[in-house]
Length: 443
Image 1 (tube, helix red, strand yellow):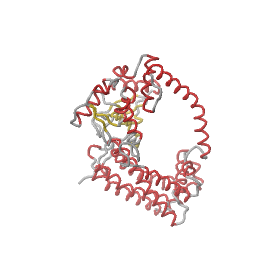
Image 2: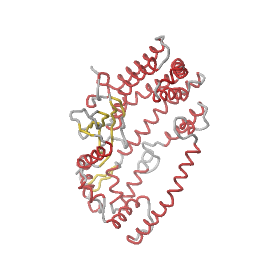
Image 3: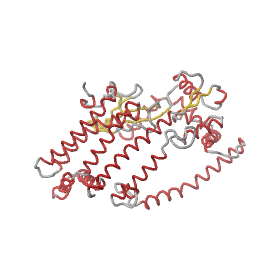
Image 4: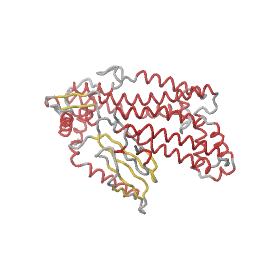
């Protein structure tokens, strides 16, 4: 049976990719990558950008082209079968990453490229690529004794598994809570668009009434507009306690032990590599130099922002008490009374504006701004294979009509779609990105 992940030559054939395609494609791509490493080192050519970096970048790019759509689908169209296939590849990918990062011959080749006089003739981008690769070798434990290298590999593999499980628990906990309201009177204050969306949710589940979930398009209107304080509290507590040992699903999909284990393993791997803390290791590849520098920046930012925040919350408390007799504002009251205050001051609300900003008009307006400011033309392309019928594809052209990049636009919330999900960035002749959102469906 043909595997679309191995035969694709352009954009991913999302509708053809099935869970059974995933692991064989990843295994084949990694085998090709390993073979490429050994081949360039055995070629006998002197290490150079052309003899080492270019061929390895090409095979790594093929692996990325295969893995990126898989990870993306796992985020925007999650299923138990796809999740199992995705997770079966994590140990394989982790092993490969560790193998490359601890490959002595490859490390020596990159050192030779940087030490050679021709290094000065490389572009700044090429020089940085080589320098960053050497840093990655060091952070992968290239200088560690064999026993510590083995432990590094074990930790890396486990961290990969824990990160996936953490994300799955958050998704499952989000989908695992819902609230069906039969009496519309309990939903006083909710705008018509939110009511219609909740009714559609119920109908999709073959239920009568109004069904609310913890997806942002369902959650936010309740927190912002619903006069039913008990419902706001119930939804707030369910939302902030997802995947934890508290709340309505306490202990189910609980990430507490995962967080503790990740902290422990991150500290252990940092110590293996000679850092005092994981914060120091994390900053080894970032602009900030020390944890103290980061904390100083954050504390300075907080000290500047806090007085304004205190003034605003005081104004909100005063308004809520004088206009509504609310003397004790809880977290589930803040968005509600903030919206009331905004309407009081400006006589306008987002819901009043919503009918004037349908999807087509907003997207077209955004593209017009891009054209006026940057001279870029954004044009829809039909016939591109997508993972959901609501997804659209666009090409970006410069002022000379040259194609500069493309992107998928996935605007709406769906079941089995993670929050902030599915950022895919791949080079298919030009850069291709996905833009995943979780907006409320139009009613």
